Image (tube, rainbow over all chains, first blue to last red; front, side, top):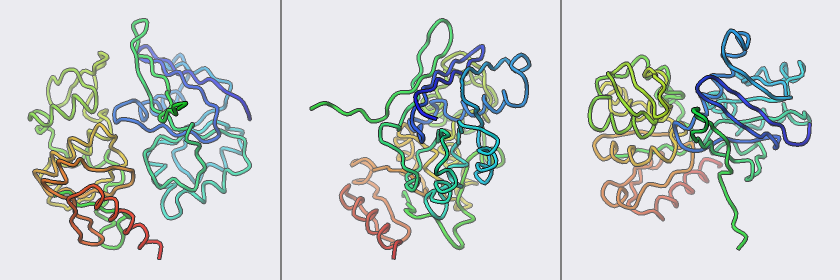
Length: 157
Length: 163
């Protein structure tokens, strides 16, 4: 898949507004910024309907939170094309070969992968510096709104 | 003293690595420490908590009520470092779970206790901390007190591990 895809997750208390445009993105940033909370909300929504959970997700991508790195091939076969990968799983991916095995498994797929991690040893997965983000929150319309900002900003000079 | 592992702890030390803080926090944490000045500081600043009602209930800056299990990974790691029973186990904390907003607290704790971390992410201790306490690289036994020496040791240990 190419291009920029919007991913909106909203509950009664919080709204995540994400723009997915890189094959591999990484959310780094401060502790407590909402990275794991995002994954947890997606998992809750996966267990039950929007009506039953109160979690609304709007995106044109078929998303999943990858809880076991060995299942990525199976999910790709099922047509999933947006993977959220939290810290615990990133740690497993990095063990031994800096993510090379995972990189091989997903090479050639057109899916998008969003890693929630500060792990410096995820070096075998080619992550563009412009694909490093932090989550930033603001208060808008009575709700906490979280969006992504580039972690590294280049000055023209 | 801050004891740093640059490479993934292996052999007899592998069991000591706290890969993810959730289970350790659930099973080892002495929640009464949240009510100490340092505990309150950590919980409020790292997990963005506005009010600590009691050890089991907090309200976030955005008005949501949460339990200790919902605290951020960084908070959990730092709070675990405060527990004597945890330190007595010689556990090694995976510092990847802690953002830059945790650094000041790590240094405060390492100034009080022996703390072991696996440095899975980039981190450079402050000059003040290095000057006063130093950092010990576990793989080499070297203790450094200057930023450049810290970097030199990181590079040296990484290079040696490639051989």
